[in-house]
Amino acid sequence: MADIELDNLVKIFPFQQVKGLFHRRQKQQLLLEQKSMPYTTNEGVVVLQKVSAKIREGEFVVLLGPSGCGKTTLLRLIAGLEDPTLGEIRFDGVNVNTLPPEERDVAMVFQNYSLYPHLTVYDNIAFPLRTAHMPREQLEQTVLEMAELLDMEPWLNRLPAELSGGQLQRVAIARALVRKPQVFLMDEPFSNLDAPLRSELRRLVKRIHGKLGTTFLYVTHDHNEALSLGQRILVMRDGMIEQDGTPADIYSRPRNTYVASTIGSPPMNLYNRKVWTTLDAAPLPREAETIGIRPVNIRPSPKGIPAVVSYTEPLGSETLVHLQAGQQALTALWEAEEAERILRGQTVTVSFPSEKLHYFDKNGIRL
Ligand SMILES: Nc1ncnc2c1ncn2[C@@H]1O[C@H](COP(=O)(O)OP(=O)(O)OP(=O)(O)O)[C@@H](O)[C@H]1O
Ligand SMILES: [Mg+2]
Image (cartoon, rainbow, N blue to C red):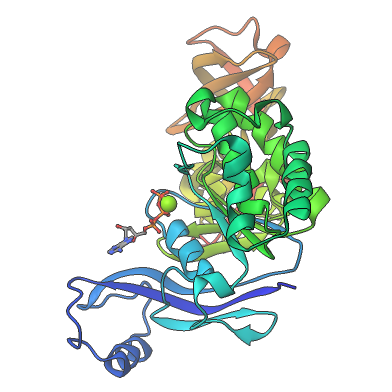
């Protein structure tokens, strides 16, 4: 079974991988002395900075963060393809730091997963089972089960060159899952595909997770994908976890201004307390330095504060209304009918319900 614990993981890629140049002990000493975050070191690139998290057995966790924040590195550490510089990875309480990848019972699917071009879909999926010397009948049954689960029976006899990108990625998933790993890692598996296909495959992944009950860890930089897939989301930035919570936690109670400004489309409006009095007279908590409000919570209201419409952006059933209230630019999200007759340059009045406001202190931490 597989509960995964990441305990203060640090990963440093040396500038120059010269053997014996830096001793491990020296490296550890340096990090322990260095109290400030983020770590800086003259040894190399610090890619993960004390990452700690727990992933429970059977859970679907999404790792969300911008390019370069260390998502792939963290997956590679869990898979055993990379060693942590410091810290521990535990599977069910047992340290697996030195366990080779093939003994971890972990499968991984990447953005560009290459199948064997000369093998049919069937043989591609069967490959890991053949390597494991599974008896023929059982092998056949297992491959067919997997093909059924992923709706791919019609293409079993095709070669990879005869499939579309989305179909190829399904085969890759089937091949990775066919040995029923304890942990399934997916690294932006659908980022090369178009939007409708991505959402179709997301539904498929959710269904597979429901059926198999395997522990899933899914990497993405798309916050909508994270919100729709994850039972829990780890929001990462610069090699650190900024927030660990359910989609509802992350959306409704962002822990800091970074999370607030990356989740939601469009994200939360954030403004400084100095402009507050010009926006609304309601009293603010004394420590509140930054105030946040979601676009959907800025409402048209006859008794509200005046704002000039910069432009509108119709999205179909809803419309984004870009406003300028004094010095402050704000984005509101209204139903299409509410915004229908609004013109650029027009002054409207809007209200900010106080129960919908988010307050952050001078360090950007939620109050
Ligand atoms: N083998 C390596 N040697 C040196 N630096 C590396 C190595 N692998 C990754 N890095 C650096 O580590 C940082 C994190 O890389 P990583 O691939 O984990 O990011 P990521 O979050 O997966 O980004 P993306 O969304 O673009 O895939 C980057 O700055 C990258 O340049
Ligand atoms: Mg990556």
